[in-house]
Image 1 (tube, rainbow, N blue to C red):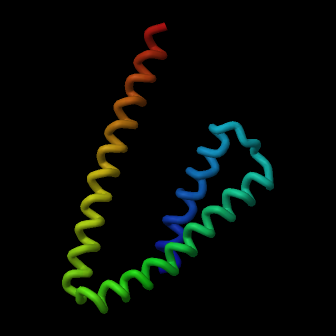
Image 2 (image 1 turned 180 degrees about the vertical axis):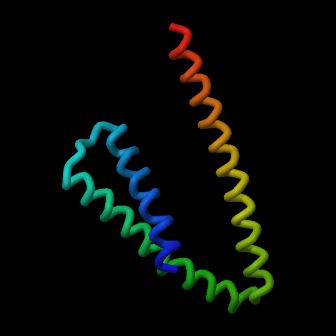
Length: 102
């Protein structure tokens, strides 16, 4: 679990830092601290809410329906993520094409 968390944490944190830089924030320790704090807050909130909601769901609708609900939510997330990636890929190709036209 620790290796998987590290594999997820590092690229996500680097992506957050890159996004902050693109929005005009400086490349300094203060920026890294703020991004790290926000990222850790979101990570910890998810680590608390997910098991709590999962346990409540199992109590109310049962394990089988909870599993089906989680699978459906993951499917919806996959569709949204695919649409987003296709849109950004398409816009990236257009921006590269436009840069070459000049």
